[in-house]
Amino acid sequence: MPSPSTHSTLLGTLLIAFIVAVGTANAVTPEDVRLTLLSGAAPVFAGLYTTRGWTWAVTGVYLANILLNYLGPHDYIAPVAGVGIFGGLVLATAALLLNHYLRVSRDAEHSTADFAETLTRAVQPHLPIEDEGVRICGFYVAATEGGRIGGDFYDAVPTPYGYRVMIGDVQGKGLPAISASRQIAAAFHEAAHYAESLPEVAYRMEQALLRDNARSRRDEQSSDLPAFATALLIEGHADGTFDYLSAGHVPFYRLRDGQVTELAATEPGLPLGLGTLDDTPRVTVRDTYRRQDAYLLVTDGVDEARDRTGAFFPLSERLAELARLGLPAETLVERLDEQLRAHVRGTTVRDDTTALVAHFPGAPCAAHGPTSP
Image (cartoon, rainbow, N blue to C red; front, side, top):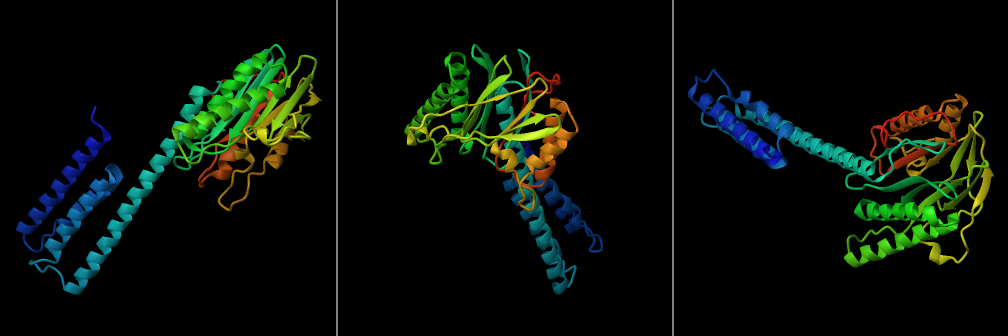
């Protein structure tokens, strides 16, 4: 199958040949028959379907053809009018080149977002998660700022100590952040089965991040290495209690009987990677849950998402409105996803946004893949 560059070369060559053919025909026809402007479509097609280099080449040949046929020896039009026409053509050409630049930038932006979501599908647990009475729905929206893929991560596993759920966000963007998030998630998945307490699980995750940072510095992959990551760990028990630990992560929310309660650790602790700065041990908080309770866990990309005016997404307000409707977990998270996308529409999303709704045990979640499309 021909490559995109081959297609651009072929189309660009054909468009230039078309312009030359039209210009030649125009030169041999009577003066009252003017064909040159018929080739005006060539730069348009070049801007839409070829590379930037071919767009410049086709446009240059087109303008040269106009000069030769309209401002040359044929003297079809007065010089003053010719300057006006040529100036208009230059402006039109500039508009074509701008359109090409915007198209390429938009395609690259979408490609980056698609890559981020594809990568997440490959390495994150498939959503929804339904296991041992625990049901977790959620969505992931990739950042659209070119080349700035974030490092959101999450996981949920049954263990001998309870059902453990984790969500987090690596500081930084790009490949170093992706590498760090994968190492942290892998450490959680392993430690969750063997570590007796959440502080020990958090310690294992932090050590994995520190090792990854050291390796990245040795490899000099980037000058913008992820220094830390926030994380929230929850451990649900069969007796209706659960423990949670926050490593500098944003609060999470309990939905109960149409009411929303923000839950935040009294001692949230430092983010992973910064724990060595303070010898204070990480602590857990214990709470209780009811059968129909649901818990919303998010990364800061959700409540810090901005609209065109720079206003933050009103997460608490929107969540309260949805909770009063008594929606099942699946519907609630879908509505929240729709509202978030509507809020940031037309803007550049600079951070990944991830949200999980955990139900212990709530209504079943319909399978719709690891992320919302």
